[in-house]
Image 1: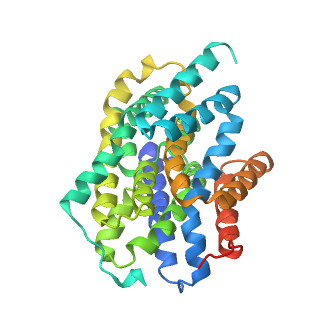
Image 2: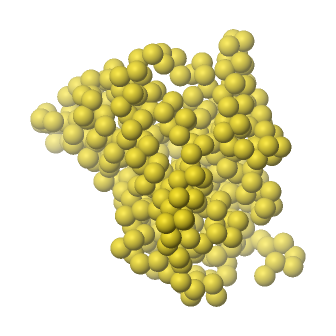
Length: 103
Length: 238
């Protein structure tokens, strides 16, 4: 287990690719093999919002003042304009500004 | 049950999927520059960096893996990097699961190749399209393949010009995923008003992010939020 590998970079990249592929197809595969009850369907319907919230909130909170300000700026811009590209630009501008101020 | 109805696959759907993902392209190139700089700095060749973009194609895990990249490797190190990639990318299990109610009727031979190159952006655009009533599988296939190719393309200037983005932090590029996900979440929330699973998932995820290392908070929050929706239903829900 401790011998050095030739082409270690390539093994590492391949290993990452294999586990990531298994994860990409695994969830879809499993859910096709259990009965789709009304309860499971309700859970799956809520899953997208739950994934978004679970990814966004901790990262925004831990992003410091830039995250606390730019996150809500993106949400507000998106709510008012409905344009992703505008919301993205507003977020980057807000974060750059806050970080530029030294926070 | 709507699952019995066949799911269309049209060229118009593919084009629509591409169109939905256009807003993500600038972010992909910015992120590609940040990762390309790191890859060059850690001694990956141009070919290796492109290969990683092509077959891993998951920016956050590439970022974390490159942070722990080394010059010489043993099988233990390969295993460690694969383990980290698995943890960061665990959310794909949930993204895939969330696509099942929509794509169940589509032939496995079509779905799995598209899932193989699924990215957060393609998933977000597709699930929003589906939440708004769309059913064309072409949208998922088109957006997945388009963003996969975009990510490979982003690796080219990324590797060579990445050194110019010396401080991604200053431009809030570490928050890019927060921005793109928030921008996608808002319209879904406007339509579905799923505030209960949102709150449960967000609160659990924030708490777990302080209690557990790594990226467990995504799975912990998302699963709790989905369970909450499954077991507590508002009055009048079907």
